[in-house]
Amino acid sequence: MNTVVTLAKKDIKVLLRDKFAMFWIVIFPLGYAVFFGTVFGDSGGPRAGMYVALVDEDGSAYSQAVMEQLAAHDAVLVDAEESGALLNRSLDEARELVQKGQRTAYLRLPAGFGENPYALFGGASGDGPQLELGIDPGRQAEAGMLQGVVMETVFGALQERMLDTDTVLADLGEAQLSLAEADDVDPTQKFVLTTFLSALKGFVSAFDMGQLGLGTSDDADGADATVGGFGAPLAVVDVTRQRDGEPRSPYDITMPQGAVWGLLSVALGFGITLVRERSSGTLVRLRMAPVSHAQLLGGKALACFTCCVGSMVLAILFGTVVLGLRVDRPDLLVLAMFSTAIAFTGLMMTVSVMGKTEAAVAGSSWGLTMPFAMIGGGMIPLMFMPEWLQDISVVSPVRWAIISLEGAIWRDFGWADMATPSLVLIGFGAGFFALGVFIFRRTGG
Image 1 (cartoon, rainbow, N blue to C red):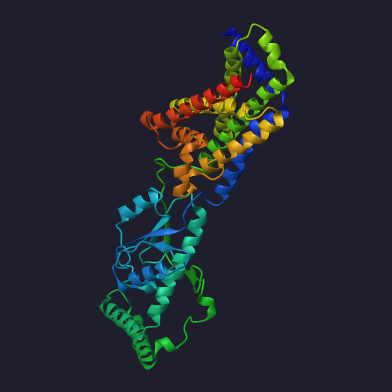
Image 2 (image 1 turned 90 degrees about the vertical axis):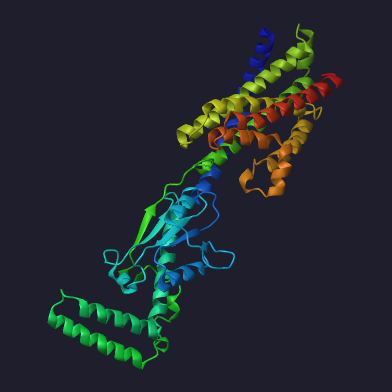
């Protein structure tokens, strides 16, 4: 055993002296994780667009018009029934959908919203009921855009209401009735307002409001959240998203990917050193010493395994300290690292016998491992790959390595959940190592 450990220390020291190899093992994986994590972060993370749940507690024609205009907006998707009617959810149901990340936001139209739509011109401090936009505070880009879209649809519906003569006359009649029943209005003011409303009804009755051209200019498209300097009352409510089995940040996804690239570099690096020792005669000299075949390969495997674990530990520590990565299950992370290191140590042994020269091994090994990375989630995250490609990816150890690391970091895996990827990885490692040893011995290694 001392011989195996000594040989492993020798290989590790040789690797640490190779600055070019250390770049691919340490710097490149971390740079990969940081770069793509930042790209995802700047775009708000992986997401599927602005999907809004509707909560209509008012049930008025005006609230229905607002929802229909929102549903017709190009930037928004809303739920609809099979008949095509808009789906009205309860507030609790809509909030839960946002918390689970199944909807970008919910829009609540409270009771009384349609009774006096003109109260909207009172601004956020007006007496009218407030609209409520509930959104994940981590999605600020969508929040700002949705506020503009909601205001556009609210005032668009109000504009249509104001252009309907019968509706305006009905609103003015309700205003007259409310004024007549009001006991706290000064008689002089009541007389003036009553006269004004009567004159206004006469004016509206004499014209077709739809032909007056109100608000029909080209500037109406993309209207902002104000009309005449008054803002509609819209309360934006933070709905903290529940992260059960979902990544908290883009780095939860990119850090396991980056760690896998480090593992590939370790496996390929040790594979090349083994063929280099064969071609330079180092293995022959070691065989002349009291060192067996098993000890030679055991030392190489131990060194590769140690560097694989070290590479993953370094990546996770960097993510934790610098990027705020949080590991949900450190105990399962140990198992994930152990099984993943076994898989890539076995891969190293197969890689080392794919040619007789360093150039041949370097070319053929990348030809083997790049497809593993491509279909296994090393380039495109597993969750974004088409279903047929995810089915094919089961043959890649990269896939199972990423799943095991993600399972410990954010997928809420338990011991039973971790059993499958761990056993698959160990199986990959044993199979690759056995194949490599068989070919190594047959070729006179």
